[in-house]
Length: 375
Image 1 (cartoon, one colour):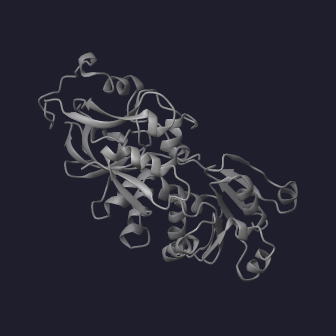
Image 2: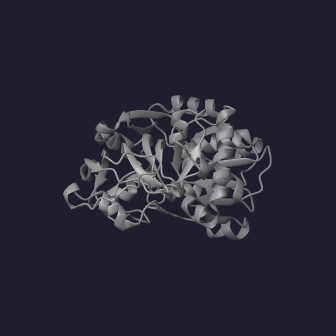
């Protein structure tokens, strides 16, 4: 269940570790009088894990001390933060990059600025902010971050959209734009179509005039899921089993063969996506939920000249400057305002009920994303 988040990027490991020490062992940093923040220490509730393992067993709700606000820092009250596959993978210890332990969980979320340091110019109290990079540790009631670790977002978009803006929709948009020169009427095929990325792909593709062929696993409520995806803008929804049937050849007599395939599963599912790609097409892998390798037929690679690529949003950020990521965020906010992009189906869970949310997020056929609320 590989996700597509990154890891710690807001503070040096030594600083992060200091936040998680008992108050008696922590050196308090003096706050200058010019800072617009209280000098009194505040107590923070945070979901912390000290070692890797089953998230339901190793994650604990702890009280931490809020760090003092430095000149370039921003005091943020977190409002909502989702539980993504990459968060689970990090806690389990089987993700590509892992934070120094102990660590606060959560790579994504939205918060409201409470106070700012004297050198902060980009945000002000009352603004909404999201992480500029994953690994900020968003599963906590409030925190102090450096200004360059945050991006301001407009407050006229829904809270759930803001909380889930920085990972899945960004991944979906970049994959649709960066690998094939698609034109209105072209087709895209994807598996894991019910995932957060999958739902964003459906909506963004529809806004771009692209057709989507959406593959999902069969399940008891399959018709309900198909209807929901079609309401989002999906042109076609098929099950993994249907995709393997010979009858799919007739399907592609009326639908253009896709030039782009988006793979979040691996194994047999990814092999089927490749089989239906148009000659010269590209399959982009951004996850591996089946924990099985991508198997590509030699004949398909040779005779259809198919291309296999990978995508990780964190690497894209490393390869582009912060302004380009901000531009991407603002583009997605415009789609949200126009009603062309909504948040994935979500279940809001209070931070104190985190165990229920963690367990639900790891259940098969889970149709809603778990969102931790901090108020």
